[in-house]
Length: 246
Length: 230
Image (cartoon, rainbow over all chains, first blue to last red):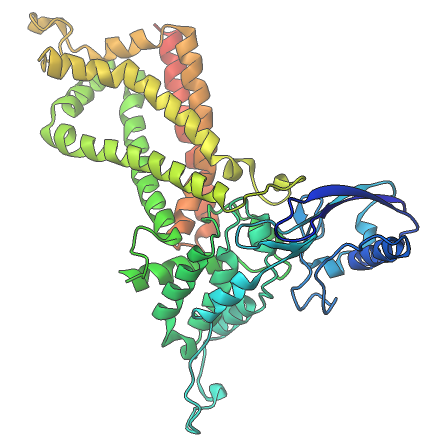
């Protein structure tokens, strides 16, 4: 396949940045999108140019590191996958592909396609945990009966890998799907209920401080989420927040 | 209590938006129920309009609450739009919004602005003349000729008169199309904002779509009916 790539290049966080065009040849349809970028970078390095910086780690769709906005969609045109699992067979010979970083005020660009998603870490630190007294008397979690639906929903929420596709794709750059998944995975379980009020208040407070937008329920986040995190989590977080506030 | 205070957090803002939306959707239903009587009986429409226009609770309690609800919904809508635009300072060179969300959900501000423009026209057409008649001229009789008790109530005649000009009828019909688009997302969005997403959501979505189509279509029917039957 022969492709034309239009890639966002930005030297650092202070640089203005712009779209630059790169032709790539001999792209196999079996390559992953990141492998295609590896080929591009090898060519750039061979020519003495600076390679395109992009985030990646496990390349198995688990870590949530890859973060590109491809042809107007977070993680590209495929559904239920991260960029590392997007394959070139989803594109056609001769295509022009736009590759941009996840854009949000809460995700400042570090370089090229690499963004700083530590805002998610700070939200998690604000309450996304269960405080356990590990004095030796802690009850075995398996000894506590949990309704199957609650266990399943908590597990589904916990599959969020924190990649930030929800923020990137939301027209308001809202982080509500991420935060609601983190709130839900704990609040549905007895161990998490103890701190449920404090957790939701603190995490939403931190989310707002980070500069993310307000959710307007477009549902784009749910569609683009590589792990299929449901909007039900946002509704649950809204309920929890109201209960905790009043 | 939230650290930010109940009205300044992002969730509180969307909940307040949803509550005002519920109130306005209920008002719209009530407005439609009264207006549709004008198709069947001018006398019934006159009697209902006279009751609404002279009842103390409706005039001095419900009407101010309604005005407040309308103003709040628009002001909060603008605040949310400004804040949301600020949350992404550099826009995407290519964004395929239609791949993951409906046009209605992405353009609530534009359908809302069209509705705002309609409300201004509607106020100029009906509400401001009504205030002038009642509170400036002091005519609370509701009669066509205040000096003649036999002249009959004026509301149905005024309604028919407003729908004579095709441009105004066209503007009303267009505004109701935008209202339908606004409601198609807004109805279900309000429930989601209030935390209602459960086994009834699918049914509620269907009901919301029906409401979003039938109520504005009904208003369009009323406008066209009076235009062609004047």
